[in-house]
Amino acid sequence: DAKTTQPPSMDCAEGRAANLPCNHSTISGNEYVYWYRQIHSQGPQYIIHGLKNNETNEMASLIITEDRKSSTLILPHATLRDTAVYYCIKFREYGNKLVFGAGTILRVKS
Amino acid sequence: DTEVTQTPKHLVMGMTNKKSLKCEQHMGHRAMYWYKQKAKKPPELMFVYSYEKLSINESVPSRFSPECPNSSLLNLHLHALQPEDSALYLCASSQGPSRTNNSPLHFGNGTRLTVT
Image (tube, rainbow over all chains, first blue to last red):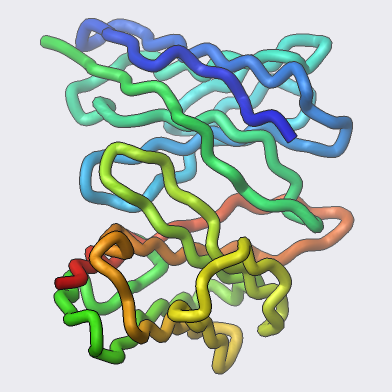
């Protein structure tokens, strides 16, 4: 089963919005899109997930295209502490495995 | 701080040693996971326990032996490891599979293992 596709790295200016794209063209109907991030030397941190509708929480917004083949994670006002590897994962907890792809290294610069 | 606690944070062991990694959560989660992460690589799934039963083993060598004594605890017993097994070992938990819910995994900060 193919993993998701993300750009290897991105830069973002501090205070600006960071928009991280993800392609998941092989997503099945019951799989959710999950986003995690991993800051150096820490465990992965859950950010947000969604099925069809756009989602927003205190950390980020998730925009999913109508055909569900791609999504964008938006950090509205990036700070230096948002520098991390961001993973986009398609996952269904029931009978499935959460498998990480290579992720995107986001560097937030002052 | 995370709600999944892993001990020890660091471990150095020889190839003939036997050691155990421990993971604990008190969120009432019924699924627990072990991942292995090498430097500059994404985490790789090793084992999944669901309702205290081993549900997934990703063809992990027998020198790694998982144990789930109860729904809050997960151990990983290590024996006769090789230097290439040196890595960050991550534990995670989730509410547990159901047909109606889809909860995220919560990760600990890992045990950094060095095999000499």
